[in-house]
Amino acid sequence: VTGTATAEANPNIALIKYWGKADAAYNLPVTGSLSLTLDTAPTRTTVTLDDTLAADELVLGGVVQAARPAERVRVFLDLVRALSGRTERARVDSVNLIPTGAGLASSASAFAALAAAASAAYGLGLDDRALSRLARRGSGSASRSVFGGIVRWYPGDDASSYAEPVPADLDLAMVVAIIDAGPKTISSTVAMNRTTATSPFYPAWAESTTAQLDEMLAALDRADFTAVGELAESNSLRMHATMAGAWPPVRYQTAASIALVDAAGELRAAGVEAYATMDAGPNVKFLCRPDDADRVAAHLATVDPGARFLSARAGRGVRLLGS
Ligand code: DP6
Image (tube, rainbow, N blue to C red; front, side):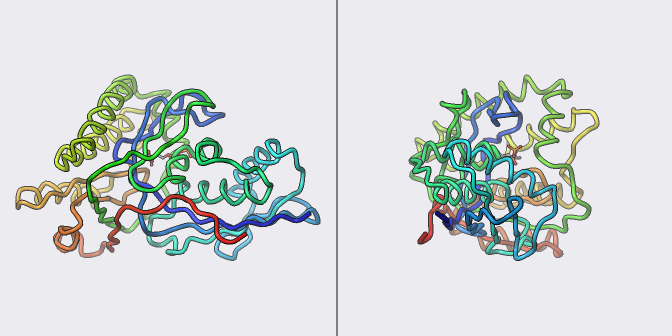
């Protein structure tokens, strides 16, 4: 039997960050985290079982991949095969529907789409919670892209560490400032492991993030946009401060990033609520109200005329396309 399935998933941006693993083999996080799934830049992935292949094959944007990225996918497919009791090899064909140059290509959308397509192709029949746990094994943040809107990911053990949607009565927008990436920086996996192992600030990060997650849930519950934004900006700054304390130090913020983070403060001083958050790269994302998104992007363009901007709202979780 040859199974095939196609799934699509969107990236998510954490407002309370995942930074540090309690268990690297299972991608169990030290703390909970919370994110917004975006309505743009999906990854679409088709998994086709094919026993005539000598090994699993990974094709990204039409280009067959060499050993390294393919290895992470093969390890993931081994897991799906073990769960399904099947042995067929597979071809994985994945495209980012907004080209990678947009700076939003993420392991979150990639592994959420792969988890959904592979589990369907191998006949696993998982519910959303089990799918979130499986996506987590590929990349921690992928557990959250299984769901749309605001999503919370629980720490815990392999059974209890999954994501689920958080009902929220706030209309959020995100303006992504894509700045010239320059040379490739260190991967999030390596950087977070180094941070937990060497940054003396790590215990304080874990404690503060746990507290900020509770405050964030309360702020969402009372639809307090200002508190949501302040917590998101603060949590991001604390994450980057914690990595600066690692050795060798980890720094994703460039001079251009910092100028853009400052611009969020300028916008607020001018009465436009925008809050900056950054992940494992130099791009800066701004949380704002949908009505303010154009003004936010216009001001940021004066600060960094070389940047490109993408506006997003809350988007859907992972979906299977006719398989
Ligand atoms: C800064 O999910 O990419 O974006 O589990 O090792 O694949 P792995 O890490 P990954 O880390 C994401 C880190 C972050 C914050 C976040 O998304 O919560």
